[in-house]
Length: 115
Image (tube, rainbow, N blue to C red; front, side):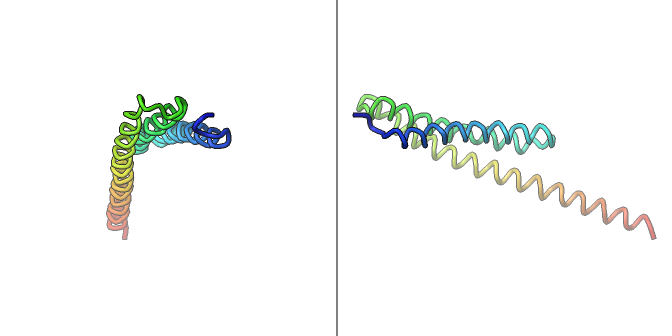
């Protein structure tokens, strides 16, 4: 008997595939827009992907006691991933706020140039 049922495996595998697709799409969006903060978000998603792969690997081997270190690694990658995602989210917010301020300043300056 395996540790996980077939429907649970489907959910686990599809979640990992979805996460990989999200990383790729966010990276592509960063390339299209030229906004490197989106690249940072895609890189910040990698520790969470490693965490998911640790869980899948451990379950694949039926939660073998010899692989319990994967549970610790998964927890560490989850914490690291949450921190990197928070930082990347902040970076996107900061750069968006900065560019909004620059646009506002340019608009104000151009309004002063014309009566």
